[in-house]
Length: 437
Figure: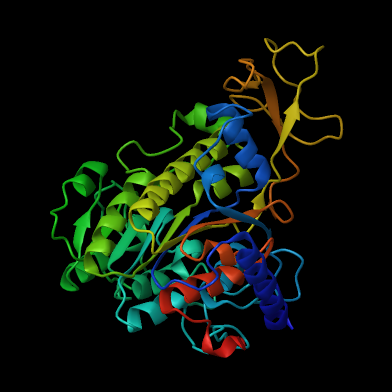
């Protein structure tokens, strides 16, 4: 039934594309999938207001096509991070506790494979890579390279990722790669129970290892396989504003490259290897900070995701046979803009909650001064607060976007599984064999 629905939406999209003069024939090329985790429309509105003004445009705003993203899963009204990633990587809706192809009922992809679209691309000889501001086992990218009965089986998942054959592996999580007691470059002891040293294993497999922004930038032009390990855990500190201030911690690790910097290097490596490649990029901070109801951290994380989208959009302009897709599996925290009326004094702290009891954030957290927008079209700067609906991953306010090759096939109503179908169409020039198209 889901496949029939997708086919109907696809045919409607094709008809609309033909009527508007947009090419309806698919293009075979590369795919960049950027996943700003947890980013609902309210979070994008907050970023736009702060950085570009209410009437301005973010990099995300400049993408060609958009559709309302439907993130529900099999027998569930919402999703989990690992189930959402599995829907992206396999093209099928799955039970909530699913990380890849293993479950009580084993998962097969929409192309009738027992592995992800990324593994299928690699088996077809295409370069592949993942980038994550979180740790390497984070589901948004990890599911493309590994499967597990538990998303917390880090020893097993990290081994599969390191031994996957991917050309680019960028993220945090050094402690997952080192045996217990072994101190890593980032000053923390490893926590592997199996005694394996995956840093040494990566070297055996031909990876060059980098740990900092400076080392990433200093990579030789002919680097073929690169493992970037940029933090002991995540490259950010996902806590509330108050806890970060109490502990004197920054939002992001200063020595770690930004998501945009990692994306730029990954694109350089992959594009040297062939005319087609698959790169999956995740900003995890936008989800983790939002789940802690940290508005400042959430917006900074999304700002970094938007910069990476700008890097990818520039690549698409230079390489038009490339599809750029973005989508989040959930709306973390349900962030919304709380507009201030004329009687509210912007020089005073915001209330701790809205009238309905929802948590409220200002610049530095609860009961602090309001955010102030960049100038609007009339030159006015507008104060506002951030209201939270909760502390969990939610559904209903996520938007998927597409830019470049085959963007015209993104429909107005986007199933989470459609990410897979559009990636597959672009990488292989056809719909998945098992999709009925």
